[in-house]
Length: 257
Image 1 (tube, rainbow, N blue to C red):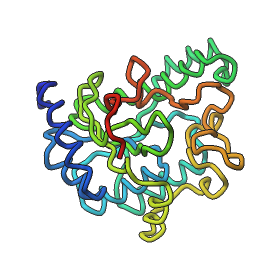
Image 2 (cartoon, rainbow, N blue to C red; image 1 turned 30 degrees about the vertical axis):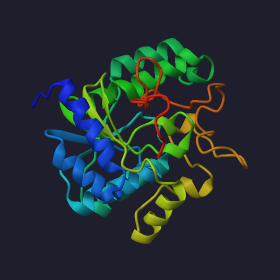
Image 3 (cartoon, helix red, strand yellow; image 1 turned 180 degrees about the horizontal axis):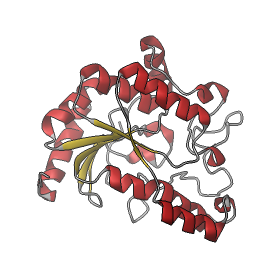
Image 4 (cartoon, helix red, strand yellow; image 1 turned 60 degrees about the vertical axis):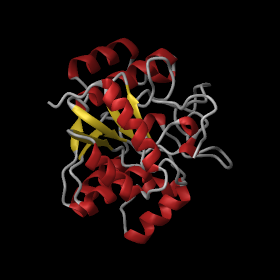
């Protein structure tokens, strides 16, 4: 595995963050692949943004690995889209699963749907089903591509295009950060990108089936995730640092794209 000093990676992340701004998403991905040595992993949950990124990676033939976190509780429509995506682009998406013993212990302690009853049990469920598998997906990677958009929430509005994830010691890039959902949907429609059928039924942000519902009129995009919890951040932990902030937030006063 190629080892790069954290200071060098941080400097590279800052440089790429500035260079990303005038570029289109396809150009951003190509630049990332060109400038970041070592493995780059794109983690997809098969949402609208992730499907657009998959299309761009496949279309350009970029050497960026695709992985997904199969929690065991995804919607049937998500599994259907997973298979359709592999057929459409002629690729295989690596599946990362929860540890069986850890999952058995969790269910034994909390019950099959314990996440509805205690916030700490929901966090534990996300930890076992998502966080630990994510760690395995990113082992040895130098770069991580994600599908975050700045307009998804107030917390995500301060995420940079490219940052250094100190906890995982890798460069993290968000090539669609400054794009709206409407722009990405138009891109997908124009190019025949397969998308989840649930989007047409009001499910704009899709995660595990028990933890996702369709939006009510005038609700924000992520309101259907963990709707029974009061925390408005609506994050499972994948993009959150140990201090609770989204990785890596801009410094106060920085300009939002």
